[in-house]
Length: 122
Image (cartoon, rainbow, N blue to C red; front, side, top):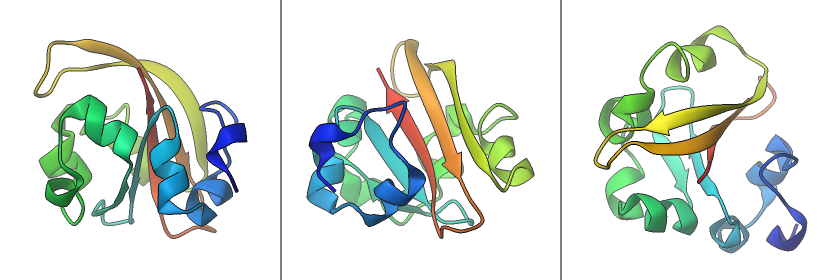
C-alpha cells in the first residue's frame, strides 16, 4: 500500500502492519508501533524528525517508560491495557523534552495484530 492515499483519520491498523518502512516514513504524521510489552518496534521518519529523537535510540526500548513518559497515564498507556480493540482519536498535549505541544493522538490496537500503534498528528 502506498502512503499517498493514507491519512491520519482513516489509515487502518492492518495497513500500518503491512506497509513498507519507506511508506510509513513518508506518512505526514508520526507513527509509533510497539508490542504488548510496549517495546518500540516501529518509529517512522516523520515522528523522528518532529520529536528530534533518533529511531536508533527509540526502537527496542519501552515506549511509555523511556520514550514518551508524558503518555504513561490513564489517557494513553492505560487504555492499551484496558481495551484489546482500540481505535480512538483525541486531542492531547505533549510535554516531555519540549514546550507543551498540542497534537491529536490516534490509538490503534487489535487482538488480531501483534503491534499497537500511537499516531501523532501535529
